[in-house]
Image (cartoon, rainbow, N blue to C red):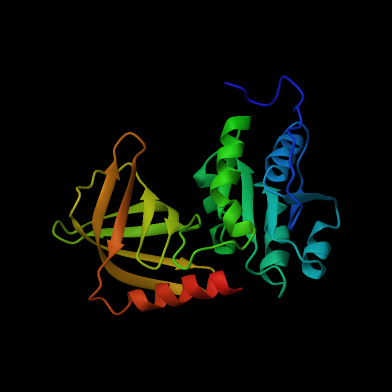
Length: 238
């Protein structure tokens, strides 16, 4: 596979006019070059931020931010989420795993570029999330976000923890090593940025054993799901 490290990135022609900006914070080459080129293919301009990153994120408007998941990332994310202009920006982490992102889950990390960075994987991630960055969204889009989910298997009285992948007004996908069955009744609990912890009943709608991932559909009779729907619609409107 092309990991984007041994060779220089060859620019690909793009006729798109940049309509959004992504801030790149604490990134070194060749990672910075690979991510910049991936964004450029979808008309997203990249801006390199240095030591003044937190201050600029408080004052300037960006549609996305890519930051290394290290200790200083907390200050950068705090500045972005507390800024009226950037509170709903898409935040990408650069790190080794979803567990790295969970350390910063209160800031609502949307997606993670894995290390060692593969150019093909980076392009796939940007392609999957670029509509959110560009605000070109259908009404019930799935929002990528990484947070900890408490899952209760209702018929077995067994609880375990999962990591979210995407959330929509109708359900969500997550990853866990635990075994679940399609149709199984669950109750999940989680919080998302401005959404305080919520509990909602659901059913497992699909399962991918190879990827240790599964999806749930919220129970239409559970009134608590309306809080999630309101949060999703509010996120998309900003």
